[in-house]
Picture 1 (spheres, chains in turn purple, orange):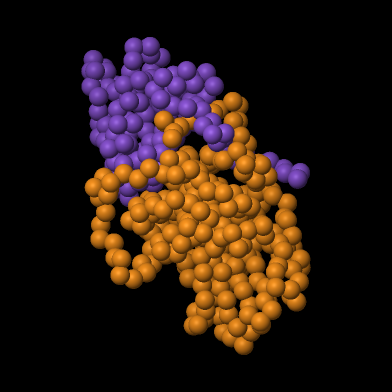
Picture 2 (cartoon, one colour):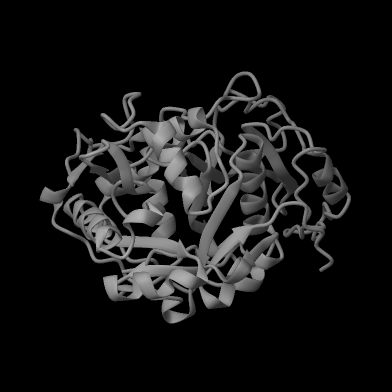
Length: 150
Length: 259
């Protein structure tokens, strides 16, 4: 296994993570159930990402695990797109990527590290040190086309 | 050590942030001798011409309905609560800068509340505002960096001018920062709103709602589909009224070892 990645400091020079094939990354996203997204848009997203890590399977040289974090580079970071190829799950890859990503964010001085977790993977994040709704803080998402009756 | 969007209807403070030593932060020169006007690189495409729209009074359609709600003879102006619908497809593009409210004060002064998403903000002013709402102090250099690294910084400024000053120039105007909200983003899929604050003297007038509403609309118009935030329990209703849903489909916000 090869653990690779880049920590980019915003404002980023326009570059993608070195050696990461975005089409292959997209396939991993799709394999875990994400909607297929435009590769060009993924490229833009990665260019404006504070930190990202991915695991390459040496035999195929394809990415099999990935995670990235966006934020303001000093106070807050949010982790997105944590994925492990289904064929490579349950052997600690996701944990390794997360732990290393958090380390990297901490090294930049970022204290507030957050994420949004689907209900079925809360048990993945908890042992890593994540707490849901601490002090009653709720994650909220803007829902489009909502008619507010209040 | 959580930095949480604050309510516009209370001056409760957020949890304290733990501040790492300065050595963690590589900062370029930051002058402490004078007010540094912070002008971020604009990271998002400008949808409406020039940024210098100070003298151009643009009012988004649904605020026109508000103007009839203010009374000229009083000191205070109440914003009539607008319906909180954000329809990005039918509403006009959010200008970078425009006047939200204009009112005449008792002593003949005219006060304008100006919204801007251009991110022009003085870090000293911001720190003063954070002090006013009771937030713990954060190093100026870090504040400046956080602003610079934000995808969008929306501000509310109050501008005072006398009745006789018919020109709309900057001369002799008193401009005061009274509100701010910012969003970080990957410029493609996700944006997260942080640090929503309104000067306590200006709370209770619907300005916080306006601030967030305009920020959200500006983000939507730049094709950011996923707009999220973390809300203190006491402000969940505030954001719900603006179109945010807590724990959609059971998705939970989580924090790493929060203090």
